[in-house]
Length: 93
Length: 306
Image 1 (cartoon, rainbow over the protein chains, first blue to last red):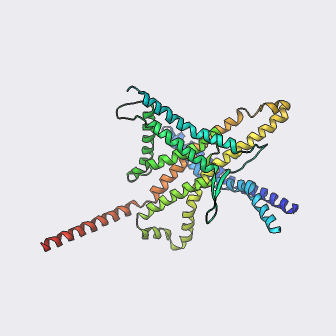
Image 2: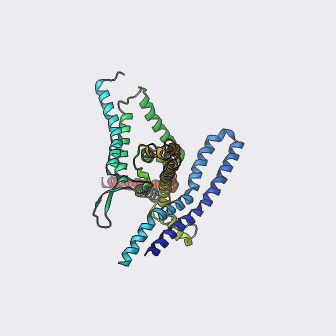
Image 3: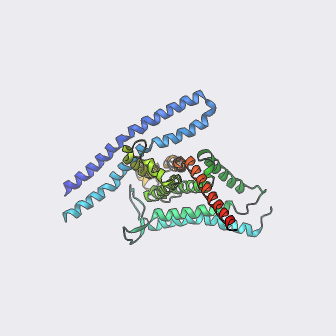
């Protein structure tokens, strides 16, 4: 029983860590967006406010996949172990 | 304009109505929340569960807090428009005008003239989302960090988008799934279902991650001050003063307002993007022509009968 619970907890933690690998994508994407925004401001300083608002909106959209990974990781750490452990206990008895 | 006594009394009542729900929320939280040691990250507390056929209906902290936020916003709106009249400029009238003008401008910029009537809805979503996220500043459980609240909004927006897509005709709506080639139909259906989920996950994840990181940092600072200052930290939290507030400026204020803006922006763009305007106008024209024809036919009948 203890071994099973240990395996559940450890695998949940591992899964959360692996899920957060997805942080690569949004990081690179948002970096690209920011670089392009810098270029745009350099070329057209008078359009700075437009560029900034578009950049913020675009960054928030590009963040989506990262946020998915984060939600999955948080669920794996705080929610999933309880569910699995109760299921295990119910299954044993 | 001179303020009468009655006006002032109503003003004070409205201000009390604005603050009272927040105080009630804080009192509720203090009364029902068990004392905790160390780090705990839990979802919304469930106050009451009503048996229902599919699964029990839960009245949770998030529901109650969102109702309280709605009450606060309602009182705020009444306060801002209290004693409003043409030609008289006072501070609250100007603020109310600014809000209306800004939302109207957003609608005009992003949705076009057909959707002019949408600005109250967008302003309501924006205000509710922003105030819900900001309610964590007074110590309430923010309703937006509970997934069911935001998924409800997402479903509402999804219903609106489908309604406006159907305005171009049911056949066109179905045909839209089989484009560019029929092979893509399952992918298109999945994309359609993913839209409300992704919209609500984005908002929920941002607010939730903010509160999780804040809790982690606060507990880490507690441990640090206990190990550095020893017995002093038992009576006075040395490092927890002020430092979490700096994080809160980003995670609660900036992130909350930004997500509210993005949610309403996506709502606007999706609704106006899915609406087939040309088709709708064509259908309206056809309908009008048919009606005119029928009316004309009846007129002719009446003439021949006469």
